[in-house]
Image 1 (tube, rainbow, N blue to C red):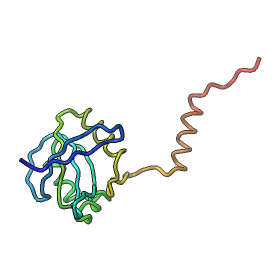
Image 2: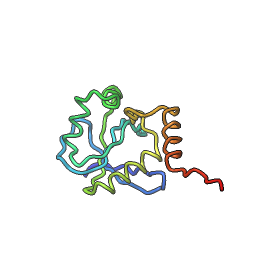
Image 3: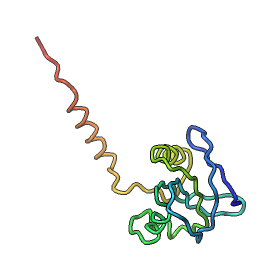
Image 4: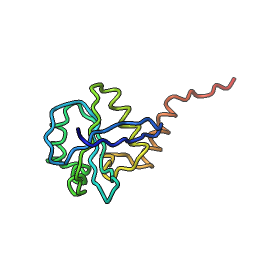
Length: 136
């Protein structure tokens, strides 16, 4: 049996992951996965993701050109944690919870808007749904 690690999310829900060496071969299974590396007796979390096809998704990280893919390759990851889950909704909830409760060095928002752009978008949306006041 593989080593296991329990990660806790923001709501303190425990998620038990199996730990595999980075060069392990995987099937296309639904899961939440974490790239990590062991430093002394503790783990550094590098990247968390979710997928319904683990083997395919890991190949994409190996060959991808997104900033997060490059970060993962340059991070020195030594292990992959796997939390099996065959339901898309619960994978999304687990990934989000764990991401909010921990620090991952390579989870980079691709194409994220600047704060100024976001403020403009929020104002535009708010203005679009605010009814003008009627004066009688």
